[in-house]
Image (cartoon, rainbow, N blue to C red; front, top):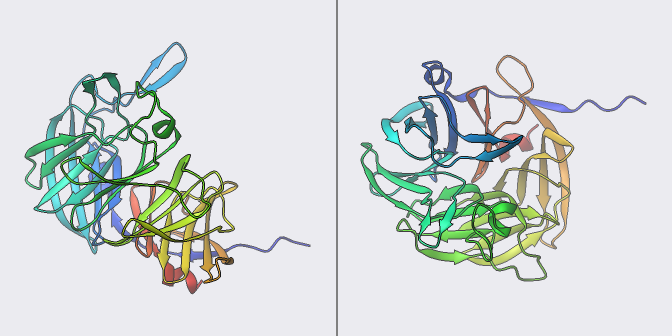
Length: 322
């Protein structure tokens, strides 16, 4: 019997970054703010992100030559921010807006060379490009999302949790999920409860609102809902290895899985703690080609997928109609 053909959903890009990248840059960071604005960081010089020695490759946090970045933001496809940051001595991977007309640039890695010598891997700028300070967010960051009030949530992958790059016993990322204020002071750290295991690698995080955060993590891949810092519910979804998720009411949209990187899954959350997989599908772009899942952000009720410098948005309600 022939295998059933997977359904597809065709999308138009909500933002096309190609013109900006074709001007000689390289997209190094894409994220979404609490109000749905899309943010992008484009490096304007040759990248110096890795060091190769003796057949091994290591992450570089500081380039040999300072990098220049172009920071962009878009609301409903229209550009709302365009600022140049010259001579930045940090390799940037991520961006989030902050209150008071500011934004945060983040390097996902941080080296600790001595007790008082380490990379402050969060850099704060005004929207006019003025540097305003730096904070330490820890090594091994997986995702960064800030709320409208300025609470910065960071999740961590295994190296940030177990320690690397000079962060030995009890590294900053041990909890797997931390909330900070813009001054770099810790406000919250994850503590598993209700029979949940600790985070060994936080595969996906969605800061859906000021009060609600969703996480999904290795090894058992529970989906955990936190409300005002308290675990209020958790489920065991029938999807393992997804890298982003979106949530609306009792529906969750997962991006990818271990053996199906480019497949999207819609799952129903039942009040009794059980789940049900409703459908799976792939995305097609405006030319009808399958969208191979690149960097994907889950924010609120939507997933934002970057593919060939174009950003595609797929929300839960649209997925439910496939």
